[in-house]
Length: 290
Image (tube, rainbow, N blue to C red; front, side, top):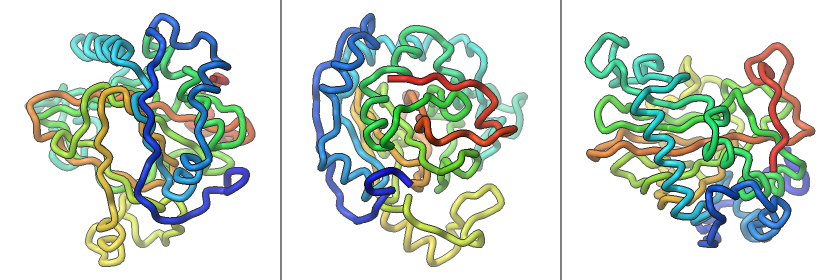
């Protein structure tokens, strides 16, 4: 558990929203200590995160930054610059049956965002992201290169829904204390498949029988339905960032609009929380950021 509160609980729906201006894309990582201080979380924001397992930071990225990041993502998607994950590779309900089927080349994720260069690398290591997460974790943080580290591309056609899950299900660390940052590059709504979260679910200890073989919540169980009924959508504007605990249950519906949704997602963990040896989580040396 995290220092101080060790991920304490409560239920309350509110988030302290700020819309501070950001530096230009050229200087995203400059003056890190100043950026970290000016975007520090206050006590109410920290308490909200520890109680609910998520927090929205409004307009953490400025319009020019979002435009540059979106342009980079669109360019990579247009050419399917590897590495990529295809909807057909994941095989969720509604996905193309194979890469050769109709829609089989639909990209789900542009992987390894940190290695794709400016401005994606700059954002992944930016103190405005790493600083607040370090506050929540109570230690300096590393960027996980193995987990998330991607641009999510939700397509109107063949872009599948994602059922209720915890990100920690396939992650291997000494403690399940990681925080992800979800940056909206376009408007995210219920219609185009914004995330939904279950407030306070990061604290729940559920028996194995409530999950299917892929560790999604089983929707056929009444106790799971009651939990899912407490879920909230998290609509975002471009530049907004959703921080969420790796044990927070979340899901997303399919994109019902005519435009692709782009989100840049990165994950961080404290320097005192080592990835387990000989696992995917420890396959690459993760940089200290912020």
